[in-house]
Amino acid sequence: MNWSKSILLSSAAALALSTAAAQAENMPKRIGYVTNYATHEWYQNVIKGMQARAKELGIELEVQDANLDIAKQVSAAEDFMAKGVDVLIVTPVNEEGVVPLLRQAKSNDVPVVLEGNPVKGMTTMVAICDYDTGYTAGVEAGKYAKEKLGGKAQVMNVGLPLLSATVLRSQGFMDGLKTIIPDAVMVHDLDGGGNPDRALEVSSAALAKNADINIIYGINDSSSLGGLQAWKAAGKSQDNLLTVGTGGEGLAFINAIQNEPSYRIEAAMFPEKEGHTAIDAAVKLFNGEEVPEHIVSPTAPMNGDDWKKYYDYDGTVRTIKWDAVNALQPPEKCMKTSADLKK
Image (cartoon, rainbow, N blue to C red):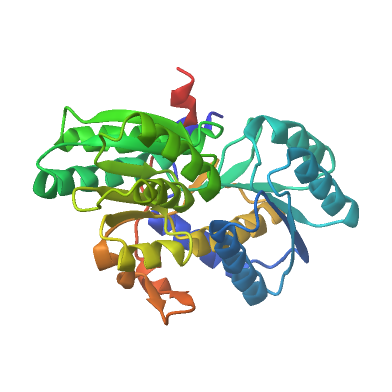
């Protein structure tokens, strides 16, 4: 079945997923999670969500970090299978490299839940609708630009072409932006590598060639912040600039919204919620229950201090407001998926 054509979980179904997991008669004893980049704030908070849910359900959760190395990721997953984990959760380093791993897990009768990115041959994936997330942020950016930037929208996209999920975010952002400002232009389309150092490097080079932009869009918070750092390093004012981040990954975006005049919009993805849902999906697979190919995790555009609706922050630690996040309704079907990129 093509997951892009599947009917996706509604919020009611997602709640049922959580309830069913909590009431499941058979709980997996051990779950192994191989993340792709554990030093990143997003994955640190995904792990926190997993740990909280696993503890609640009495499941032992072990985490290994691939550190952006696909060979290390495969080796870690093989190690988990050799140790006899009941379920694997994997955030792919890259989509092609995980395909053989899924076949190996299937031959070993080990269910696999993917987080974040689709892979050919997968059973299920817990992820946001990436295009939709970019699109709604683009609409909000268009409204801002129309009101505050004189209706001009010239974008530096600090992207990540390696992953279909991040390509969809960038496409969605531009499409949403153009619903408000039809002549919006992508001046720079960059590969920021998803990390702040690379994002700073490529953004600095791009701005040195052409600094006639007024919107910085980043496919994650590291990308948007790297782009903004390059702008500031060039000695430019933020007065006529809008910076849009994606992820709401950790403390960085909160600090940016509080301290950077141009950082006004965040496409929040709630990593804690995604980790929580991944554990519930693992429980369902362990019990042989059917799951959708794409279990949609909610997102929300945040304007200015909207983040306070979803998080408490004491200056050191942020705490998710579960009632507010659980009340968000993910779309029943994504506007576009990775399959649409191949058409």
